[in-house]
Length: 465
Image 1 (cartoon, helix red, strand yellow):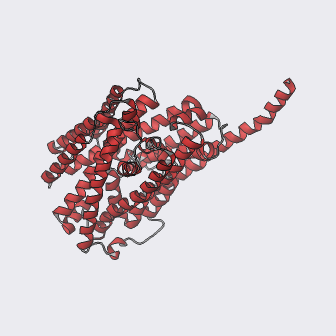
Image 2 (cartoon, helix red, strand yellow):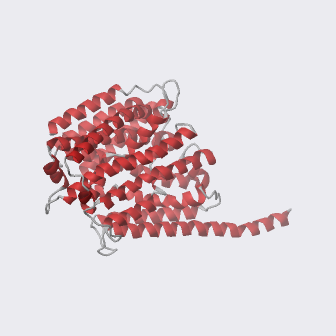
Image 3 (spheres, rainbow, N blue to C red):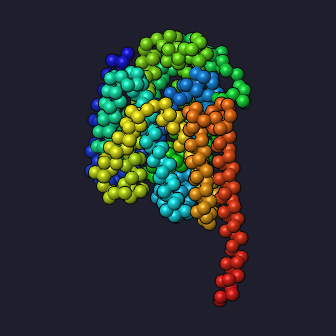
């Protein structure tokens, strides 16, 4: 099966290279415009949104959650894709209501240099974690960590994706996303039909885990519904696609991406649910799927992971280049500097893969917890229109969220038990609620203090006049 999978990877890689025209301008490389200066159409933007968010680690997570926690685990992960709906509202407010050209520009206007520093730090971690997680999944598909097959797969996949990403930047990413999404959908449909025909997709198998609000699956669902308010704002891949088309195209692309993504995640996650319902004691998910479905469906299962990993990786590299060169302004906004940024981020991702996997795997979820510091920003400053929130409120919320993310990391990895012996998702729920409540409290106190100063300021101005 590994040989067949390698052939498929090679085919997709060659096709991606052929579809990646060399960027001749900064607008094509960083903004995704065509050589004639045209914005991407609705279909390309929708498919690009979907395929860049349904990355390999996400598909695997949805299936694993279904395997252990039943349909409710998969639904919990699917709920994160409602971020497209809140993301659409965030983009519309930043870009069309307040008139800013990027998230960084908005934060700089509201909170000064600290606004962008904190934000860039969080999304920098997000980008590196996405690169490493997708490369890691590819390595696992081809061999055991540390084996020659694993090492070769990781390096070859990274090099090929980096090459075609460096050629065309965001424009190339959008073009290849369309092809990769079509391929992903075809394989997913074939796999779904195969599972249905095999007789495994029964109601009994899908509902083998009864709903219990105290179980990990439903608890994670509540966590997802709390985090979707801020999660999209900390994802530069999604946010970047909100600034490259007109208002109506952008709005429609986010709405369509939401329902398509949710559907794809539920379908793929259901394979894990079906495996969990038929698993023997101590049997791993992949072993169960291979036993009940056979070699060909497992090949299709792995192909979807490979295609999703490649589509996410090129988009992540494009956003990395834009972050360093355009948003952070660490270098002149040229195509060559963008390519250098891509190479550096890929190197960091590879270092994470080879430095050790267990804790770093847990670290992928940390950025979502850290992103909760943006919730009060969205509620008060973005949607509430408050321009007088003090910087201390912003920094206090950022530090709180960072501390919460670190606490979840050490707790979920088993390094500490400061929160007791509860399940890690119960701990995550508690951490998320505390961050949201205290973060909003910090913003409210900052707002009230500023408002209390207004009468004194007005009286002083009246006296002086």
